[in-house]
Length: 467
Image (cartoon, rainbow, N blue to C red):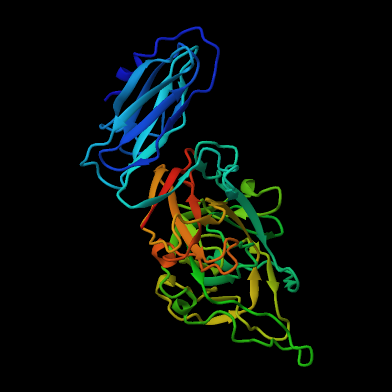
């Protein structure tokens, strides 16, 4: 159904503004009845729409929790009665697919169009249900960093941004002059590793959105013909602890290997976040002194607990190589453990094919100061401990009514316990079958908002079949 055709029923009227509300029976067996009720101001015209997916979609200056698909149908329409409400009973077809939510939303007329929150209903066949209908998530005991201002659903928080100056916290002596590093005009292949604590990791997934370097002295204009930055996770965690007796590093082999592929976390694939020319323009220097590398072209999702590996692949160019970067020497008595592994060109000796270098010529504990921008798209909502509707429950895959924008994601995890306080809780698992026969359960919703911002993912309800 075309949305504009449904809206012709909504003749504007001079009525006092009142937020409309829609309520729908959350679940019923095929052949049973679903009840709907529209609440608002007496005399308001309305139309209740139903769709097969939950959006979200922006239209008419509103956010619909409907897909506005070709299956969009006007389920009901009319005028709210003197008591300010309207009810409808709907019988689910006996062939209604079990576990597939239907999505409802009502548009109400007045001085301006009003829109209820989206609702959903699902068909089930199990003997029992555990229903979580999020009319008021905070009052239900949901905790976490989700958007607690939203009612009628659990909604992700907007993505959060942070900037991390990656500098040594406890040791490291600034090198007195700038080091070319990735700005080498004779060509260079250089890997630098930064530990999770160095980049301010919290265990949450984040998107790397910018990388900057710290110049020493005045920045001069330069142009690098080809510049490539690859980013990956690494299991390498350099330990710069110094033996107080020998003044040598206690763990000299804890740093990067000269075998460059060995520094990438097994099963991880490096992401080329930028490849192209690089103009170093002094006008781009920030007030905090950092200079930006080129804007990233591709997304790298940092897992929040591994080390971060920056891999620069820069062939020779006609750049003047006049800009040096701030470096800290982490250990004075030894070049190890390696904070970087590299092969660098010099006058009369070019590194013409840095991409083909598999084994670096050398490594040292030079720490290149960088500044990183992250966007955290993840937020979480965790339920209180819930009692199952039976003492030895057989849980089945939950029916989850979602509103998920392009680029967003929603994931559920579960844990069980035999005590109501969860004192003997199992580990979190993406499978609810892992907690079968446990009388108490807890779930958490992990939201991943689109990095570009805009509409946010949300959950209207969770229906857990139990036998």
